[in-house]
Length: 359
Image (cartoon, rainbow, N blue to C red):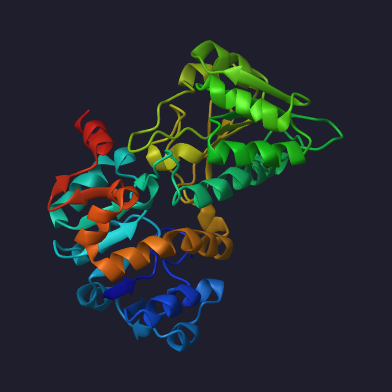
């Protein structure tokens, strides 16, 4: 199979779909891998390295898409890339269609087969291709949150440290939320964890204990109270194939301290704060009601080398299956992968996404 890896064009997105090591693995199986020139330069994956691994370097995106059967990306196609998509092409990447109806409509019009990393779902309900980026985003949420709490960044002027332990509230106790908890605890914060699932809260209590951490069953009143005196609030709410619910309303912001920080990890799915709007690494924040918002849609793009390696480790077995068996057979024989099928032949296939976009 001809597998194409284009350069990512989203703002400050330096991750790449395949590492040279992954290219070598696919080339050894007899597949032809096409890499757009300079796709990995920013993280040290030069064209020379890719060539040594068995790849063919293609100068332009248009040439690469035209010559490929399967496209491996990291982020959803932007407007300029839609012209390259066609109905006999398969796209394997993060799509996040539920949070962007306009993008979904435009992708449907291309007829492309879209398999989304974030909805590939294992039998136990876990999300193997979302998990590595969720883990990175969870850790980064505390890093960027701490940075924006600094006074020169319009923050409260507080430091997450044992000198004066501050309050970090994490809403959502999935993979991203758990990593945020770990990072916040490592910074000696007083942590509040809010989740709808009481069983999950019990599991976390068994793992982390009760010293310096409070477990809260989610409700509007509980969230309002938890965030009122928090320095940092991290939104890590995810529902497979659906737009993120708005768990923090604009009204709730009025009760928060000026200069406190909201980090919305869920922004790819529309955001879990009513006040959220997508931002980028060039202009990552905005202030509403005196509260600083960080809503960057590609947070792991801040650590592209780490993120690319972590993502490839998870995606490569699925890429091999698609390439070795062919798209249709791979989907038919692997239910986890079939759960990732979002769109095909101009139709929405995934039930949750169909429901989300119909609403």
